[in-house]
Length: 367
Image 1 (cartoon, rainbow, N blue to C red):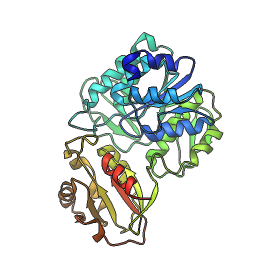
Image 2: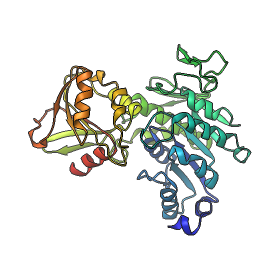
Image 3: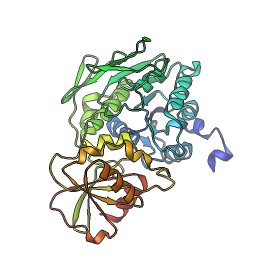
Image 4: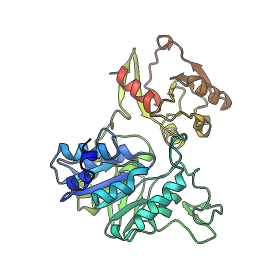
């Protein structure tokens, strides 16, 4: 309502503050939380994930802190940058999301590229993923880019060059096209237990699982370096994060010990599947296709469920039959759950991979 009455409200609320914005298809909420925690002290953030202008306005109204970190939906990035004039813009990745209503990823890359090439954003510093060709295409026009060499688990939406459409060549951690478009040289690189930013080495030990979270932490730290934060202290604070808005949280439900993992699209599932331990423990997959999820669940056929061979997978949610069918094609043992009470108790921590509304359902019913 505030934005209807005062369309310039975001600009008014952001004036005089140091703003960092974070956008991308996957990892926005976690990277935003890492950036806010790593900054230390009071930081304004839309921690609930309300990542469009009404959520940003609500966050900015709720606190007078001069330090702001905002998660921004990919399609709204240009408008929010125009309104808030951030100091730093973090670009994580671009991949397919909700197929029935999301903008095609190359169209989003073009919109980002237009925004970053605008002279009005000449002072904006961009922290960008050097290993995602679509992000590089968008960010290369910016005057101030800090390229980050971070782990990437999904590049299936960027197999051809966004400039000439030829197939991209991948090898030895690099990618390039015959037209000359190629991965830029990075100023920050993640190693086994360290992040190297220029000549500075920072210990990077996380409580959160997965290489994708090391990538999120690296991008957050690179953004914080630009606003003058001590990176060793910031990395220590980030390393203590154990869950973000319920993600990665360990919960109890009906005698089961669960770890809740949000996976909303093929890229997210590919990343989360890598965190599933290589034993024979049960895995639960819960999929809905409600408004917040996107009505089209055909993206399940792009998820590498073959990685779950050797596990027994319990299929939950409104679209449990779709999940079971996909698992059948992947030759993965599965059980369709029509009665939650019939699921046998496991002595192990059970990973629950769920998309938006299914994740919310499990978060609400567990403790």
